[in-house]
Length: 330
Image 1 (spheres, rainbow, N blue to C red):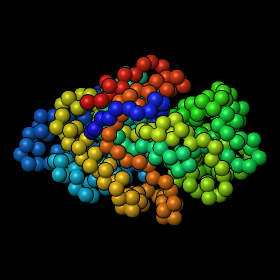
Image 2: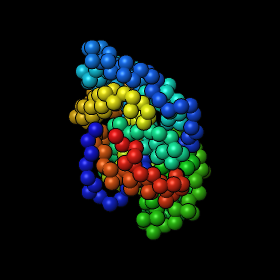
Image 3: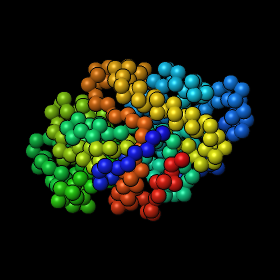
Image 4: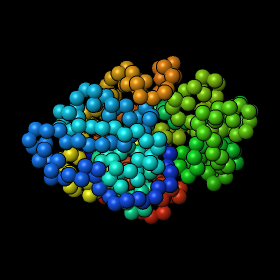
């Protein structure tokens, strides 16, 4: 996993954040430690279990497995699909999974609660392009919302309250001269948000792909590209393990990080293969898959940007304490 120095001053936090509860004892599901390392030294593959989500952003790990990157690194990978980061984080902490995929915001919340997590590889980034990203606030004519500042006093739909969308949209609204504290947030599932807009039940909605591209085709208007405007290098999600597992299985962690870096690079360079892979493990319709914007994939993390994300999370109430992101990295 590479690291680079920051070039931009503004930070952000990632994807939907949910309340997490500590459960179980931190550790890895293999529990083998030195035995796993010995097996690898003898030419056998180290078995690992990785908790993933049924979304487009985990496609690189599927691609990497198909391309043999993990086997070349000495790993035999089993993917376990969970429905959300709320399930993945506790499963890694309890030792059910060795590694997991989660939005970075959930990892910050877990770290704020004292859970011993360690980020081992990026998952996905914003495209950084205002006008073509994987998340945006959209509205319809007549809503009275024409700019970010206009969202103050408006009713805005999000898939869940207290998440990174609330924080990043709030950051953009405040930066535009509005008052994010005046936004009236309501919870509406993504598939139902476009109908809520057209029926006038909400003034705006925060959508992600593939719902975003579908809504844009129906004539909604984007007013805020919350991730790209908060930080063009916005980290959506990352792969992580626990500190005890990393200490007991350093070779497996290094191998996983290396294979993920190769997988992320391959995914970024082969978008057609990436879309085809997404179609194999999700229920996204082929026509929607062809039109949707893809996240950006990169194997490096920016320490300063990650720290800025943590500070922004604290500013907008996602976490209560100070999180030193250096403690989350190898």
